[in-house]
Image (cartoon, rainbow, N blue to C red; front, side, top):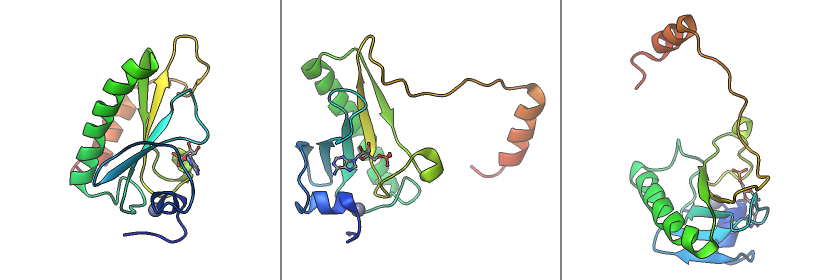
Length: 138
Ligand code: AMP
Ligand code: ZN
C-alpha cells in the first residue's frame, strides 16, 4: 500500500535517498533530515497510513514496541541522557508528512531542542465539563 505523492513512500521505495538505521518486515527507521538533536530518527511503517487514526492497531502496538527497542539500543550507542517519542497527527499538531511516523528524539543534557508546551491549569469546573463531553466516546 503506497501513495505515489508521499515522500516517505518514495524513500521506502528507494527513489529518494535516506540514512537507514534499521529495517524489518513492517518498518524502516531512518535518520530525520531536519534533526531536533543529533541522532533524531523516524520509525516509518512500510505501508502508507496517513496518521495514527488510520494505522491498524496491531501496527500501532508494534511501532511502540520497536520504539522501546530502538531507544534502548540507541541510548547506549549515542550516549544520550533521555529520549522523547513524538507523534504528530494533523497539520494543527505539526504533522508535515502525511504518512504515519514516530519520532525518536535523543535528548542531551543542555541541548536546545526546546519543544514542549506552556503549562496551563485545570480547574474543577472545566475538568467536569471535559469528562461530560467525552463520556461514552471511549
Ligand atoms: P512531522 O512534522 O511530524 O510530520 O515530521 C516530518 C519529519 O520528516 C520532519 O522532522 C522532517 O525533518 C522529516 N523529513 C522530511 N523529509 C525527509 C527526508 N527526505 N528524509 C528524512 N526526513 C525527512
Ligand atoms: Zn506514504
